[in-house]
Length: 445
Image 1 (cartoon, rainbow, N blue to C red):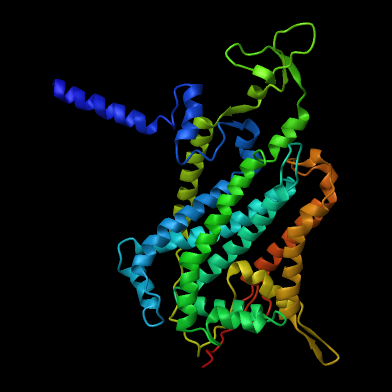
Image 2 (image 1 turned 60 degrees about the vertical axis):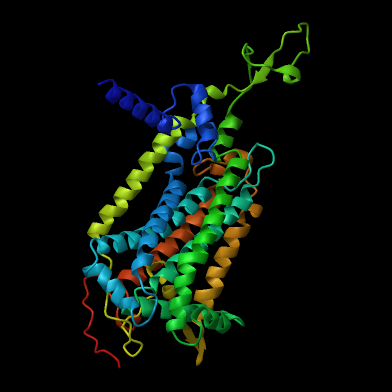
């Protein structure tokens, strides 16, 4: 009996040592837990209550990181089962769907998480813009514009990461989506054809293309995302946290508070006046901050579980498609790019027209110039935004009403084009209303 009790006590002691950083018993332990825990040490010991709220950031940045983690874990397992060759790629994916136990779920979760990550990273960028979180606030040594640029690059790399993974099933959907996407890219002046040749490893989509996309998707691009994300998080810490903290700092007033007896102020105290006793003049942070552990860690766990649950439920609802094996001789009608590039494909259609027998190249205008201008404007915008510091971290600040309106119109334009390209474009890229039937089209050989 004593031996069993001793084992139970040792087990309880070991369990307590393992989880104490997540469930600290005191404020002192809460501070120590952040420093001593490998996963938590990049968070500050205390965080702003506002930064923990659901309605400021919607935790979109955290959700993006969790989706990337899901993609990394599921992708690692898929690498053991996938064969990157044009002869066996499709069959290996088909085995995942119909032979490997829960292989369909593993592939579906990976695919859904990839789509969600593209959408969430985009929404995160929208949130940052609408709250002017790319602007420096009241604190010194901030450089939020640089972090905004890193975020824009992360969005572009996320799109390319999903694009390279789109080809790997080697079915008709994947093959022709990549064909459309790379054809748009080839319209770039001077370097367009060269970039397409380097990306495809030749002039056609074949084995060289598949192995390049596979290596980019499984190694180089995830490594770039990880490096940029690490710098992104470090930059958030260096800038004093989320931009809502600057809003709180500007709204606060300095208060005279009694010195804490247990704290040694040394020469940092203010001793001018008629007394030699140390006085302090500071903002009462306890009203606005809480310990990161367990307040932040509990919400982090909740967001992680919720993200995994939503992605799993969507995997059951929307089954990952697998069409016929890729066949360059059979062209689907219509052939569409991946959904996140459909707005570009639609824009190419809109900007392609003829004037007096001369045809304007829509692939150049709609596929290269317009998106290039949008990306350049996004990168440079923080340096042109002259709104006051009090608008930093504020949703729809009145000082930024005009630029927020323009930004939302651009976002709405992209969303409308995506919806049109997804649901309203049929054979020969003709427009069809949802209640109209598409004509039966013979296959082209």
